[in-house]
Image 1 (spheres, rainbow, N blue to C red):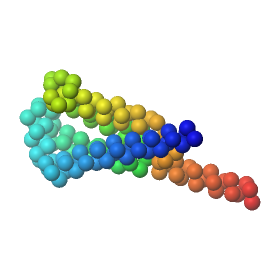
Image 2 (cartoon, rainbow, N blue to C red):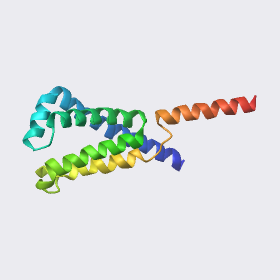
Image 3 (cartoon, rainbow, N blue to C red):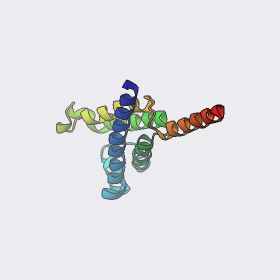
Image 4 (cartoon, helix red, strand yellow):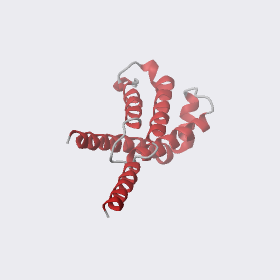
Length: 144
């Protein structure tokens, strides 16, 4: 029972954090546009702002989707954490801790959560689904 509850809570966390990142990517691609994000990155002094804007938006989109469906979780976790730590250093560190003041509280939580989810295996992933089907097929073959 405890393992099932752990897997369900990890799934819930992956869905919430994954959707959050997908919506951040949507904001960058659709609402602000990559050119707007690039201009904002340039104002912050981020090197190669055009490339950084595309990289950030793509990592948020693909990493968020990876969390949602449960594929390449360690890669997604590390890349998402790296993007959030980049945001922490370049945009939020000078504003202190609290998000209400523009601080790094939120991006730090997203970075840590991304890493934790990336390295916390769960039964309820796309990979887990295929592994379970393979195990069931082998059991059926052995039982027959």
